[in-house]
Amino acid sequence: MIFTVNSPADFHVHLRQGSISTLVTPHVRKGGFNLAYVMPNLTPPVTTTDQALEYKAQLEKIDPSVTYLMTLYLSPTLTPEEIRKAKEAGIVGVKSYPRGVTTNSDSGIESYEAYYPVFEAMQEVDMVLNLHGEIPSNAEHNTHILNAEPKFLPHLYALHAAFPKLRIVLEHATTRAAVEAVKACGPTVACTITAHHLALTVDDWAGQSFNFCKPVAKYPDDRAALREVIKEGHPRFFLGSDSAPHPMHKKSTSTPTSGCAAGVYTSPILLPLVATLLESFGAIGNLNDFVSNNGRAFYNQVVSEEIGSVQLRRVSGVAIAESYGSDPESVVPFWAGKTLDWEIVS
Ligand SMILES: [Zn+2]
Image 1 (spheres, protein in one colour):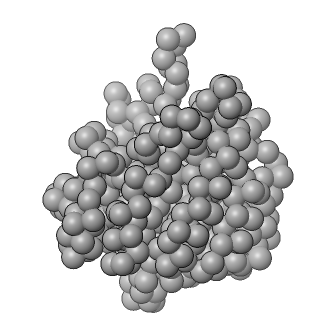
Image 2 (cartoon, helix red, strand yellow):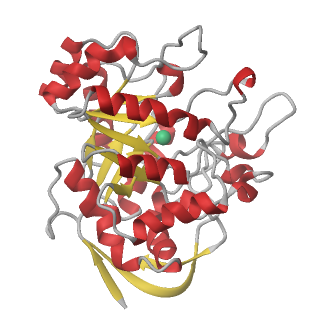
């Protein structure tokens, strides 16, 4: 059985910098994708147009066959002028991380109001706001990694109400509450879902560092909500892998004084993995919508049979590699040692 996917696009991926970038950037294509929406959380973070263009040039040098859509990191240095410059230069979005947001000292939660002039400019020039939808843990408010996402959702509603035309993506949703919140918003609000959150629940990462990522996978009912929204074919939900490689030694040798890095690495197996997962819950018929049509429509990116269409073949149990690259920087993919039911026809 052969399945054709037109122009697969990954709308959230970490391509890193330096030698690990050289290793993982070609894995976008290896995993079946020809468009990568690139996250800006480098060291230092990508906060200016010039930095983003330089980063894009580096990625194009590593693999010119992929379209890289670039983003800026939301920080207090970002100005409305820089937004206009970024738009002119073809930069598509601005990513907000919890720590990049100023804190209201009285309530102890994030306030986006300091950024309203920036969001106003983004709305005007039509740039996308990408939200890491979690608030920082805070013992006083009983905020922790399991409820950080639901507690963020009032901020999503407030931003959408203040900027109804601003296109917003709630990234890597992990809860039923987040799915319902995005559905309740208007057509300018969309949501990415990762492959691994379609597979994992709390039990899978508690005690297993290779399944540990942020946001953490939640309860079985939350995972069911992610699966259902794909199965029902909701047009504002699409794939953003949040593929986030870390060298193996940062994932597996935590010590009493340093924990393991958060991040699951799916790029090199992404399309076969998504096909395997969607088939497992009866949604293989929505594969094209989930990995291409929905996201490309939201981001105004053309879908075409000519641009990197990929054929998948149904197989019985192809083993996933144990690792990629060589020590000390080898990376371990998600589900290493397990098998997939689909493979890319080369
Ligand atoms: Zn991410």
